[in-house]
Each structure stands twice: as structure tokens, then as C-alpha cells.
Amino acid sequence: MPSVRRVSHEFLQRQGLTTVFGNPGSNELPFLAGLPEGFRYVLGLHEGAVVGMADGYAQATGRPVLVNLHAASGSGNAMGALTNAAASRTPLVVVAGQQVRPAIGPEANLANVDAPALMKPLVGWAAEPACAQDVPRALAQAVFEAGLQRRPTYLSVPYDDWDAEADENGPAVLDRRVERASAPGGEQARRLAERVAAAERPALVLGGDIDAAGLFDDAVRLAEHLGAPVWAAPSLFRLPFPNRHPLFRGVLPAGIAPVCEAFEGHDLVLVLGAPVFRYHEYLPGRYLPEGTRLLQVTEDAAAAARAPMGEALVADPGAVIELLVRTLDSPGAPQERFRPAPEPRTAGDGLLHPEQVFAALRDELPGDTAYVVESTSTNSSWWRQMDLRRPGSYYFPAAGGLGFGLPGAVGVAMAQPDRPVVGVVGDGSANYGITALWTAAQHRVPLTVVLLRNGTYGALRWFGELLGVPDAPGLDIPGLDFTRIAEGYGVRAQQVGGVEELRAALAERPDHPRLLQVDTALTTPD
Ligand code: TZD
Ligand code: CA
Image: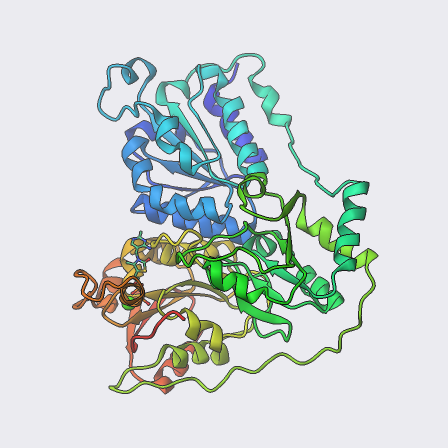
């Protein structure tokens, strides 16, 4: 019989999980022994960066990705990054090493005492196989659960298991295939179409899942077919709709009262591919205006179950879009043109306004550029200036956990080598995932990082005002020079002065990573 390791490696190969993002320790080495031809191990120097890179890579490829972490300490370091992967529904398969079986109970050094429990709230499924012979099957389950649930999964494997002989049924996992189809049934489809057809002023709310599922263009078809206004769901992590499209109304504000206000006058709100809703600021009020009904269509059964209002249908939003376009009449709404961006605002004191930076990105970079954004106080400036019309154009840390921006940009760029990728990262955010620069340099990833340096945690200054805390300590971050930090990790860097210098730099297309540091004025997120 082949070893547990051999069967497991072959399973991963057959499933196409051959790019591994990891940071190993002693417990993990036996899994990595004799990795077959075709595997690629992408080393990250900190587990937060490892998971952030894997998250970006998995989102951009749309496929499950293997992550290799070290026991409890490595898994613990990855927790913050996993909050984002859980919220963006990224299928990461985390395989962590464990001490040998006899050493776990006595808590030898590097034993992960209750490994599944450590990770449970953040992953959709976590396990440590009960015996070595169950490892290949459990690994298969980790991969399939990640794909079906669209959530990270976690498998802890005692390192003496890999050398064990597989039992005769072990190789049975090699031929497994697990798929899901979830079009609404006949009666559900009829009711849904009737509800939407009967609405006099329907509105659409689209979540990040729409872009993740490759439904960006389908969403445009549906909106134009219905002539309905479109919002992006609150706490947006991927853009589901062209942001300058005449039907686009922007990202919903992440508070109960303002969301209710936005829906005023609409009798039906159809939410596709989003939880209802990921609010942020606590701004209490009614969930919905009088006379507004809400209907949520999502593949995420947990999101349907936990929503505090409305009806929900757990189904593939793609199948529902298709159904509505096919069965409903179009009012034939006249098509206006895409809205132009306004003149960018300017700032004094030799600083650039973030709007000037974003206008430069918009004008100088190709229309299919993918942006990974982690700059929190510049949110409104971003949407005022950008013009994103393509699928997969925008990624943001889905749970607001900083440390996704730089690693996520590296992962997206590795997944899409032919597409320009730009990380737009604040001087605060950059520190949480800074080690990803090293991986970018080692793999010569052609990534541009635009580092916005305003010397402070800008969004927290704004939040402080909102919460009546104008005098909180620990908000300023002077004395950081990311050109020198980047150079230390092997990434070429440049301090950029004015708009013209920025535009000239952006017009270049180097085949290696680079960082452009821009000193910017402080703005507010809304
Ligand atoms: N730690 C982690 C892991 N995630 C967080 N979200 C925070 C801390 C808190 N936080 C925010 O929510 S925004 C922010 C922090 C520290 C400031 C980010 O600063 P920045 O961007 O320089 O990247 P702005 O544009 O100056 O706000
Ligand atoms: Ca900042």
C-alpha cells in the first residue's frame, strides 16, 4: 500500500491544489517530504501574510487553495487574516502540522492541544483525523467542504501520520468529485418571478459574492433588463457592478438607519449574493421602510438563516438572474451613458489629495487593472474618482481585518500574471502584512503598491469623532518610511512628489514589484 502522504499528495494534485502558500515548522516537514513535480510552495514570512496571499490568490482564481501553517502558534498568527477569508467566503484549505500522536496528550512542545476547537468559529469545518488511515479522506473532506461552504477549512495532522501506510480503501478518495447545483425549483421560480414582476419600484442590492461567482456582467444584464437601481451591499469586499454605470447608486452605508433611508420608495429590494446586512457603525432604526419587502437570494445558507428580516431563498444567484432575465418583460429603460468622474479635489501643504492619486490611477492604468485596496479614510475619494467596469477589479479586506492589502495584492497578482495589479495601501495598514513584499520580490511579481502616507490612522480619527472620543491616544504613526522598508525586503521603491511625477511613474510597466510612496492629506471615509 502507498503511504498516507502519497495518496494525499496525489489527491491534491488531481484536485489542482498544487500551489501551496505556507510557513512551515518542524511538524509540517513530513507532509512536505517528496512533494511531486508540479507543486509550488509559496513561502510567506508571517502567517497573516501567508493567509492574505492565499486569500487573494483563491479569490482571483475562484478555486480552493492549500495553506500550510505551523501548529497552534502559526495558526494563531493567521487568525486575523482568516476573519477576512471567512467574510469573503474564500475556500482556503488550511493544513496544519501537529505533534506525533503519542505527544499530544502530554502536551509536548508544539502540540496543538485541541486543534479543531482553536479554529472553529472562523472556519466552516475543522478536524483532526481519528487515525492516520483517515487522513486522505479527511483531506478530501477539507477540500470539498471549503468548496461547498465557500469558507476556510482546517485540518490538523499529527506528523507521524504521513509515513503510515494507507489502508486499502485510502485511494478511493482519488476519484471523488463533489459538485453542487442549486437552481430554484419550479414553484420557487414561479413565485420569485411573480414577486419581482409585481414590484412597481424594485431595487437591487448586490454583494461581493456576485463578482466572486463570475456574475458581474450578468448583474448588469439583470439591472438593465429591470431598469432597477443598484446598490452594492454594505462592507463591500468585491465590486459586483460597474461603479459609474447610470443605474449604480453606490455602496450602501453600513448602518441600519441609513440603509432604511436608502430604500425609501422601493416596494421590493432584491438582494443577490450578500448577507442581510453586514452593518458596521451602530446607527439604530427600522430595518426597512414601511411598505418595503426584502428578498434575499444567496448560496450561503447560514447568511440566509441569520438575517434579521426579509424572505430568503438559498439558491445560486446566477440561476436566479438567468431566470428573471428569461421570464420577465423589460420596461426597455433608456440607456444613459456611464457617468464621468468629477474633477479631483486638491490639498495644500505640498500634499496630494487622495482623489488626485486615484484620478491618476484611473487615467494612467489600463481599464482591466485589478485593485486591492486597504486604505480606510479614503473610501469616499476612491469611489468618487474610480471607474471600474470589469469583473475582478476590486478587493478589500472583507471583515475589515487589516493585513490583507499587501498580501492580497501579491496573491491576486500571482493568480493573474497577465493582468495589471495595484495595491492601494495606507501607511497604517501596510504594517500588518508588510512581509508579503519579500514574497513579491522573490517571485518577481509585477505588482505596483501605491502607499498612501498621511502619518495617522485616519479612519480612527474620524471614528473617534463619531463615537465622541476626540482625544484617544495611539492614533498617529509618524516616522515610517516605506521606501526604505520595501528596499529591505527587496522591492524597488520611490517617493513620489507631485501629480505629474505620479502619473509618469504609473505609466511605466515594470516586470518586477515596486512601491510608490505618496504623502497625502487626511480625508474622511464618507
Ligand atoms: N487591527 C486590525 C488587524 N484591523 C483593524 N481594522 C484595526 C486594527 C483597526 N483599524 C481600522 O479599522 S482602520 C485603521 C485601524 C488601525 C487605520 C488604518 O490606517 P491606514 O488608513 O493608514 O491604513 P487611513 O486611510 O489613514 O485610515
Ligand atoms: Ca494612514
